[in-house]
Image 1 (cartoon, rainbow, N blue to C red):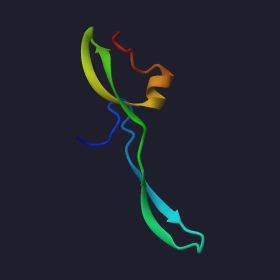
Image 2: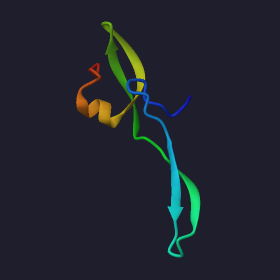
Image 3: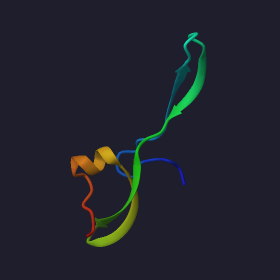
Image 4: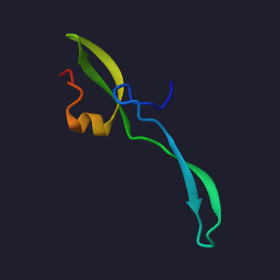
Length: 63
């Protein structure tokens, strides 16, 4: 399964590691994804959601 938020579509980003000698090598920035049980149309569903969507209240957790 891809590392993508099911709500907002946030995925991995790319950039550079920069060493002390200012040498650049590629790296990836991964989103903080959590697997949660959420209520979708009144039913329970397991979803992969980023923490910014959880914090913003875009997901109603089943509990």
